[in-house]
Amino acid sequence: MRIEAHPILGTRSVKETISITVDDRTILAQQGDTIAAAMLAEGFRVCRHTSRTGEPRGVFCGIGQCTDCVMQVNGVPNIRTCITEVEEGMEIRTQVGVGRWEASHE
Amino acid sequence: MNDSKIDLLVIGAGPAGLGAAIEAAKRGVKVLVVDENAKPGGQLFKQIHKFFGSKEHMAGTRGFTIGEMLLEQAREYGVMVMLNTLAWGFFANNVVVVKQHDQSYSIQAKKVVLATGATENTLSFKGCTKPGVMTAGAAQTLINLSRVTPGEKILMVGTGNVGLIVSYQLMQAGAQVVGILDAAPVVGGYDVHANKIRKAHVPFYLGHTVVEALGKEEVIGASIAPVDCNFKPLEKEGFFVECDTICLAVGLSPRLDLALNAGCPSTYEPLLGGSMPWHDQRMRSMEDVYVAGDVAGIEEASTALEEGKLAGVAVADELGLLAKEEQGVIYEEIQSRLDKLRSGLYGDKRRQAKLDLIERGCTR
Ligand SMILES: Cc1cc2nc3c(=O)[nH]c(=O)nc-3n(C[C@H](O)[C@H](O)[C@H](O)COP(=O)(O)OP(=O)(O)OC[C@H]3O[C@@H](n4cnc5c(N)ncnc54)[C@H](O)[C@@H]3O)c2cc1C
Ligand code: FES
Image 1 (tube, rainbow over the protein chains, first blue to last red):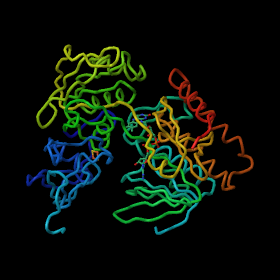
Image 2 (cartoon, chains in turn red, brown; image 1 turned 30 degrees about the horizontal axis):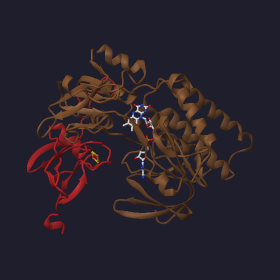
Image 3 (cartoon, each protein chain N blue to C red; image 1 turned 180 degrees about the vertical axis):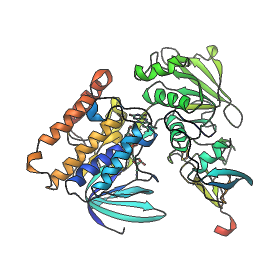
Image 4 (tube, each protein chain N blue to C red; image 1 turned 90 degrees about the vertical axis):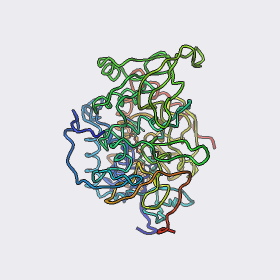
């Protein structure tokens, strides 16, 4: 959920809205959001599934240290979504295992 | 920026790194700061609470304001800052290799200050890898920088200052803290912080631990239980707490990979976070290499800043740029501010730990 009013940080400043897709579903994000934050704001918490047991993983450290939040972004796997900012039209996919590169990037 | 040579390379743009950079640059040292983050400031911009201490420690000022002030001073003294830049290797002759946008550069510096901060500790329990279990730092980053809550009902694990502060900040962000627990029988952090949460009637489960994070794909609750005198959970007495997020605030450890890579002698000090690079009273760990802030022992933002300043002054001194009238005096000034910060119930112990460590000397 986005924090609209905050006792110390004040009212959220309105930034440019952009759209991204998460597993083909379009969601709206704010310029400057990290991918992980934009997803959490819309209630998406699963970033990937592990290769052997298929267990779900999501944001854990939030500062790029643990790699639990990696996803496929614009066809490139293993992108740490907690430190990568959204861009208009970004295509984000839940990653399975080590993920895969899509054709245009091979 | 290619294969350049500079006077001082600072790794980490948190309060410690910025403090070192400012004090050195102020005295004519040519300084470059690198940080892997997109924004400088380290943990400071997440810290929306007022700092303690006295006026000279900027008490009463909020973390992010201190961050702005430091950045302003760094600009004023001509400190160069390279962001999105990870330092990944420390080689002979003070050559540090950094990576920015998939491109690596080597930087050679006369002196290096390592101010790489800390890593949060984690806790292992059944289901601890489920989406919804995260470090308190992750939650703090989300609410105070991204302005997004990690969930609606939060269970906080750990009653140290980070656990207490982040719980309060989660409430300020509009989330509900359904409980805060600790395996220890007493609250670990300061009363000022604990009282704010008590006032909001958040239940404290002292002498308890998390047994399991429940939920199929994501956290929908936690099973918690009291612990026996060996901190083993008494599972039969366990009970369910409804929550969608479990935050872990179970301590920090110095982020010392680069220091070890540099060849800094290491030492062990439980009161300061465990394994850490050894340093002397001027923050020097080995020839040409200094450490400051959390990497040199976990404390808090104000001490990190002062330690950084100490390192910055020492670098200027070694490079022959410390004015005659400053010799000696400036070290005493900074040391006395550090001593003041390290006073009181917890501070005294940390001060003693630092003294012991310096006195022990380094063993390789
Ligand atoms: C999650 C968290 C919450 C905290 N909350 C509080 C609080 O509320 N109040 C308080 O007083 N203290 C708090 N602390 C304690 C905190 O340690 C100090 O406040 C202070 O930020 C420490 O300063 P520092 O400069 O040593 O480290 P940091 O502020 O952590 O800065 C270290 C910087 O180094 C960078 N870095 C690390 N390694 C590399 C590398 N290899 N290459 C490039 N850059 C690198 C990091 O990106 C980071 O920006 C918190 C710490 C953490 C981890
Ligand atoms: S959550 Fe740890 S790297 Fe993103």
